[in-house]
Length: 321
Image (cartoon, rainbow, N blue to C red; front, side, top):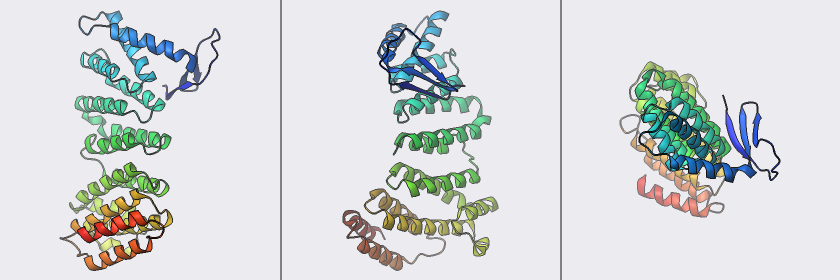
């Protein structure tokens, strides 16, 4: 199975094939791209939607796949492939593979991620037994393409969508595993707003699970704490979640002091503060005065190195804490 597709810069027009295959990877030499894409575009748009012959259907499948590989944001080509799938001429599983190849060439393609979500919705409606497998597959794919392109909002947004829609009964262990993974990512990518937003989504999902007070939830939450100790064994899952928020708040402060002038870290901090206060009213009370004092001291201490963001954080705290 082909894993990656790309275009190799090359000006030579020697009389040989422009296709390069290495292992499970395929590429085209750049000199042939204008000719191939122009021909694929012409052939694909030449087919009429109604009364296609078998040969025309096969031709449309071929040329539309070539079009989306060379231009992953070609909206009309993806729509034609949707028509083929709805007519039963194309398998959504094979199109998942094509969309993955398109992403390997352009990891920030919004059209490709959108088409992939459409495919996944059809797949899980046809066979709900594949939900967890598909979810793990999408999480791995999003991680791969987030690595290839910095601040890949489309990959992180697709990751959130996958957690929300692919498995309504997502295992708590998988949520905790994802949290541990994105926590490491945030520590190394302190300007990645999208990754932090995904982390916040995971924490919100874990907060909802913590309210169910199941034994499995408490065990998994204890394991995801940065410094678990014996005292946590007696805590409810809801209060373990509070401990988790406090730990993330402390870790965030370390990152802010180490890497000043990153707005994403300050915005991320406000999520922890807000949920520590408003998500814990019926559990252990939070000393709002002490919390506000600490935030004011943090903002004051960062004024020389991060004046703009620390002042904005000070105003936010005075308004909401």
